Length: 184
Image (cartoon, rainbow, N blue to C red; front, side, top):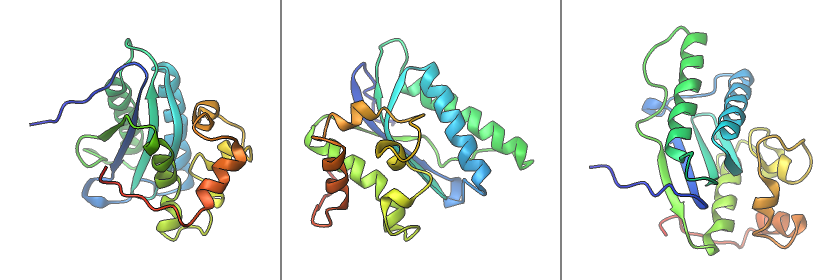
């Protein structure tokens, strides 16, 4: 039995999924860029705010906010995932599923976890030894947040509202003493 999804106006969610059979989703930089173009298209269509994101070779994470009752995160994820999958299936002359089952979602209600979720998502490439610094990874929202890249996808003002400033965000992200437990 599926657990109920609590997608309502002004709710925050950590959304994530990985490749079917733990396989690679992004085979080239073009695939990452295609994902980001589709993400922007569907976030705009469904009025979803993306506070941060990170694309890893075989999975992705989004921290998002539903802004209306009219457009649900469920519909956003379904349409976005289907469109991305169809595009990659056509490109690679394949068929079938790309992702491992239903997209996972954790509703974040306690503001004390907001910062932690952001840190967890943006540190993924560091933990996977793809980079030494979260700011160096090309396929996350970190460069948009820090002003090193034009903000296209990330709702920077919404994200930074949980921090005192851009510098306090960076300090929090670089603080190795921050301990967290994802099983909240």
